[in-house]
Image 1 (cartoon, rainbow, N blue to C red):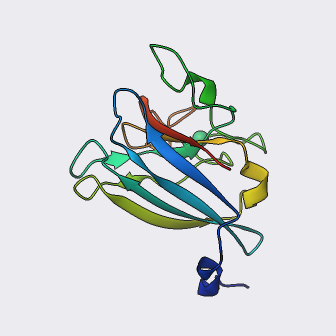
Image 2 (cartoon, rainbow, N blue to C red):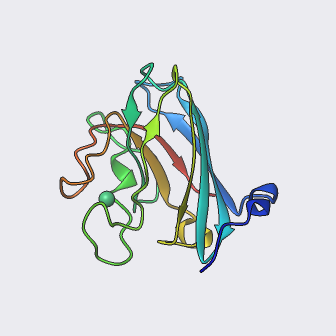
Amino acid sequence: MFRINRKILMQCPCCTANICGSEEYPKIHGTVSFFQACNGSILVTEIFNLPSENGVFAMHIHNGKACTGNEKDPFADAGSHLNFTCEEHPFHSGDLPALFSNNGYAWNAVYTNRFQPMKVKGYPVIIHCNPDDFKTQPSGNSGNKIACGIIK
Ligand SMILES: [Zn+2]
């Protein structure tokens, strides 16, 4: 048995994703910080200017290498959900709890042992326009990608 030591969060994060909205959602910005903890990671997420007062927005780590795309999908090159272990959704390595908007502001923290921070460096964090249903394959029917940031 182990427990999370809160002192972990007083150290510098191992890596951080700076999140930026797509052309359609230029006001969205924020960070996802990754801390090493108990053979896994703690992610602390803070996002500003989500596009609804009290909406719920899916968030995942994807398996692509860039926050670029095309007219139809501004972050198409972010790829699909990061999946080191060939699991189905929502058991992908990159599956995460959703963000809850508080007048456009969201903050959350989560512990996962599906990856160590260094293992996800270089991959993109994606925020979607809808909640994740944690059921539909392959990605929880969470809708368009509205914001992205590479973990650095
Ligand atoms: Zn997934």
